[in-house]
Picture 1 (cartoon, rainbow over the protein chains, first blue to last red):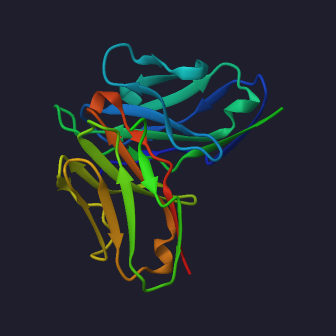
Picture 2 (picture 1 turned 45 degrees about the vertical axis):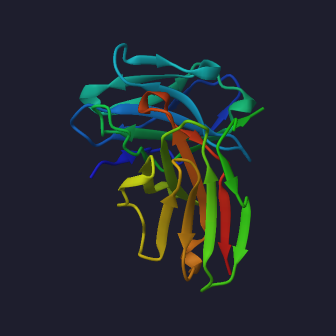
Length: 116
Length: 113
């Protein structure tokens, strides 16, 4: 079965520190990859997505993610975090490609706390 | 509407009672998804609709859970004879097509006492 692993449960950083959140998936074929963010008290929002092409994807608020097929990874990065980035981050994968709209499989999330 | 709307936002129910959770997707979105979010467990897929049909019901935890969608729009998730382990936030999402990703609603927080 497809699965998504987010190895860090809770990350605590100071403002201006660099961020990298790990995401690995288990599926050997073509995948679509997503990162979602959930700010405190808010609903899940799409941060960025990868379907094909350039494996380095840029999203909103200065976030980016790199798809490394050989490592089955899609890590999220940001060069300099802000207090407002405090949120929970979810990686997700969809392996039902070919025009279908199958469901996304989500990781368990990584909680990011940024100290001012 | 402008976003995915879920109601109620909060529901407290007694163990053994039935509950209905409603999702109103973005107008024109043909795909609709239900997930459950429990503390520390991430998002658990429940069921997905394409139009009014549900090609994938594999995530429903038991036969106490059912869902329907009518008119290609509003969906209802029903939990019969609720148990304490059903307590969670139930999230609905819709999408126009896969390339757009999902738009999530704010969820229904269900507490079974």
